[in-house]
Amino acid sequence: MKKTIFTLATVIMTVAAGFSQSKIVIKGSDTVLPLSQKEAESYMKKNSGQNIAVIGGGSGVGIAALMDGTTDIAMSSRSLKMDERLKLQDAGKAYKEITIARDALSVIVNNGNKVTKLTREQIEAIYTGKITNWKEVGGDDLKIVVYSRETSSGTYEFFKDHVLNKKNYASSVLNMPATGAIIQSVSQTKGAIGYVGLAYVTKEVKDLAVSYDKGKTFVNASVANAKNKTYPIVRPLYYYVPSAKEKMVKPFVDFVLSPEGQKIVEQVGYISLN
Image (spheres, rainbow, N blue to C red):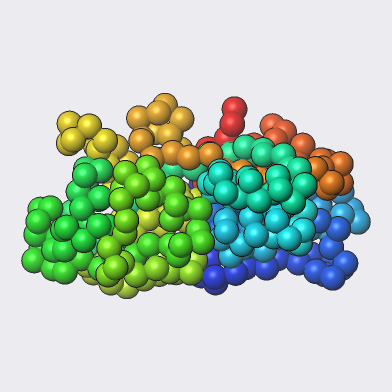
């Protein structure tokens, strides 16, 4: 499984004629970004003359673009919030929600950290500021440096809701503008901890086994463990398509959902819908 780090807050891929002449614009989630890039590359190879621009920046960026009409597809690693749905409804902007893949969210630490596993409760305590030293969870006497995505990220929202039980992040948590920046920071900081989509995990960091049954069983993030439902932190990944653009983007979306497109999902490092 080939895995790639994207270190820029916003990554832009423009193919063939360039961004200004692109027929389809896709904006949003950094988690969905590498998948959309690969899908777009494969689709354009099969369909000459089709141009697709894929732009990251976070789920919030994609959803904002959906609202102001500056994207043909919004990528998101979370579902729309109720207030966002109401704003779109009030503006008369109909849309379609499409699940294109699933993602296992990995909790990562520096390779020099001897801790190999944490319970959900311990992760919550670290991110809410109750646990501040690795010796409190079986590690060295070392301050924990906590990294998170920024507040506009769908990954930030999902982690807060499903791992922190909707509790607020501690004020000491360092918010990073992109997933690749978390990988880089954790790899360079011995006391660091972070969370990233499975496709971003590399040998430069260590993936922790996680327990959701108070320490009875610990499971590492992997495609196999997500598929057999033993790994607990799994989420859907979405495309949001304005109804006015649905006909135009349908061939590409159909490709993503096809057996060929879902094979790419697994090649990138996520979990197919099959």
